Amino acid sequence: MSVQPNNTNRRGKLLIFCAPSGTGKSTLVQFLMEQGLNMHYSISTTTRPPRGTEQNGVEYFFITTDEFREHIKNNDFVEYEEVYTNKFYGTLKSQVENQLADGQNVVFDVDVNGGLRIKKFYGEQALALFIMPPSIDELRRRLVARGTDAPEIIEQRLARAEYEISQAQYFDAQIVNDNLDKAKSDVLAVVNQFLG
Image 1 (spheres, helix red, strand yellow):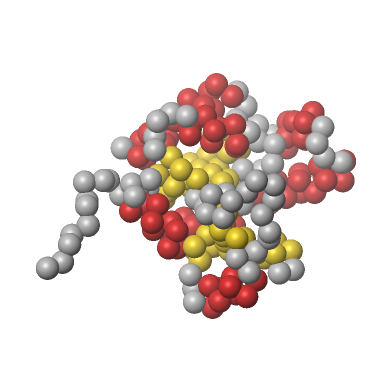
Image 2 (spheres, rainbow, N blue to C red):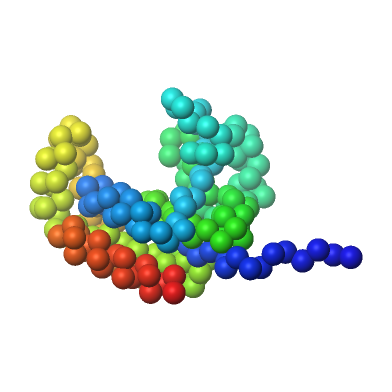
C-alpha cells in the first residue's frame, strides 16, 4: 500500500526580488515578510565557511568546493555563481522543491542574472520583481548618504546599476521606489495578486 502525500497544504510559489544596490529592496522585502504571506527566504548553498553564528541549513548550506562542483556536474542547481575563484553560491533545486512542497512562498533576493535564471526555470510559478531607483542621480545620492562605501565602490555600484536597469524589461513587474510608502503599497498589491 502506498501512502499518498498530504496535499491539504497549498504548494508554495516563488518571489524573486532584484534591484541595484541602494534602491531599498531589502526594506521592501522585509516589509513583505511581515505581512503574514507565509514568505520564507530560499536557503542558498555556498563554499565559503560560516561567519559568526551562522548555522548550516539555517542561513546557508555550507559545503566543500568539490561537493559544489559535483552538484554543478549533476545539474542540481537552479542558479549558481562563482563569485570569486572557488567561492561559489547557488540555489539547489531540491531545497526549493522542499520549501514549495511545504507550502512556503519562497523568496529570492538575488542578482539580476540569477533572478532571470530562476524565472526562466520556474516560469509561471515565479514572480520576478525589479525594484527601480527613481534615477541614477538619486541612486548616487542614496549610496553617498549611506556612508558605507568608498567613492570607487560607489562608482562600481552605479556602473553595475546601469546594467541591472537595462535588464528590468525582462521582469514581470517593476516597482519604482521614489516614495517608500507608495512602493510598499505597490509591491504588496502585486505580490497579493500573484499569490491569489
